[in-house]
Length: 270
Length: 361
Image (cartoon, rainbow over all chains, first blue to last red; front, side, top):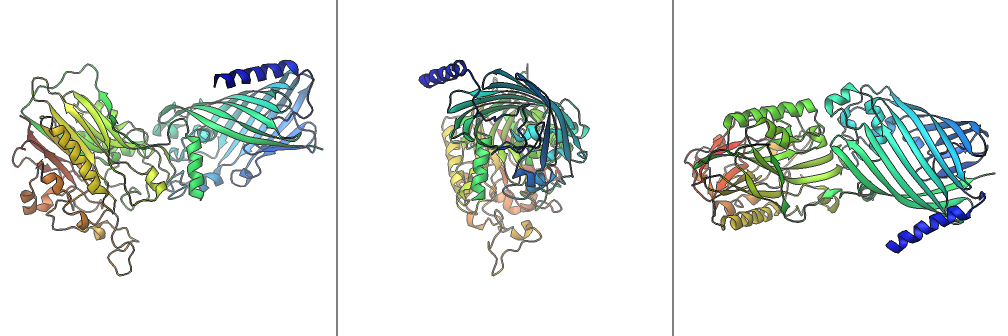
């Protein structure tokens, strides 16, 4: 185990030092301020598919989830030079159909059928900046404000209080919140890339209906820390594995979870 | 296949702690204690009570699991209302030792209330133990979500040797359901009465819906636990919700009383012929395991003479109690005629509490 850790550290540092120029086949996995050239697109299993609409604008959505939980994001790049890139993010999600799908009797019933799920939307706007600190290595930071619409009749009893889902659905119970993320990714060597991300979900606003049912501080803070290693199968596709450490302040108390991560990225360019 | 995929997804989602606490081995119970307390004075005769409190659901809420209902997740105001009613009666009856079944700790269905602490804070009890029998991070069925339900012993005297024993699982379930299903348990402790006689207290809740020999296997294990504690030479008091009727009961089949509107039983083509947990005939003599070895607070002859006065359970909130499922036993005699089924407490739970006076010395 110790040998593996030492070998891993050596691999990371040697790759950082040895790569002196941009590698053309480096494919982004994490969200960044960079936009795809017009007509190019990139997709992965768990992430959204991103399509370049113009050299300044991309649209992203998940090709499968789009049909059960429509969610679309636009990214507009308004500043870019050799080192920095800054974009704005604007998106909307409608979770109603998905929540109704898991609101059922028997196995698969994540939500009790006794509840009504109203038509709801969440709208988010934010800013993301990317800094290239070395060739093939980037750092990105984002700040997103999200708020919910038409959620006033949503019953607190419908909440699905488990990691990954809670931070992404808390906005409907607490009206609004912030999503702050910091990510780093780059090449380890020609065949391997790394990606790491720390994300903080804050929901500081009160929702009387939710507070009357559960402690008012619950579902107000979540964080996720993930790290992945990717194997570049070829110039356009890479496979990744890693782990995500999740923390949350749930209605039953604070809890940590360590989850495995598996994903791939496929880049299709002109 | 979709069930297996769902199961694997949930396993991944909750992989830091086990998704299900399968309670594979004997372990220590969770201890609760008030700060800066002084133990109550010793007594020669003590009051003992047992009550299945139905996780603060009362009797009028039609919960999906046991009352042909459509409710799964209760509101905080509902749970608090019923818990307060239960606490009021506990403070009135004032037992020295209290056995509770179906107590929830941070369960979604009961608004994530820590019911042990809630009861301890509002009663005169100073010491308590909790032993889980159903502890799952997320039950992906009917909106149950997180569940931690168990049995408890409350006491006015300090408790030691706090032990949780797992009982055999139901064998009449498919593997997936069995994995997520309740693992019934026995909890025991040594009650240390300062200047008085120390004794053992044992509480259990047996399977409600098994259709095979599960309850018999659970009873055998439970009696063995009582025997091993009793063999230490100290007095022992035990009780709980056995989900079995007395061996000399006149009525043994409650399928008609328990059936939901759309259900039909006892007909030529009815499959199953009986409702799960409502036909006691095949298991009618199983409780003799206890009656043969321990002294009941309610002798069978007393019960036989006036059965309805001792009924403690019904599944229909609009009906009066129609069967006896809750018991107290001991290895020392009870005060004659002190057994009481508190049948006036109809709103509080789907079980009535029973209490009796026990000569510990």
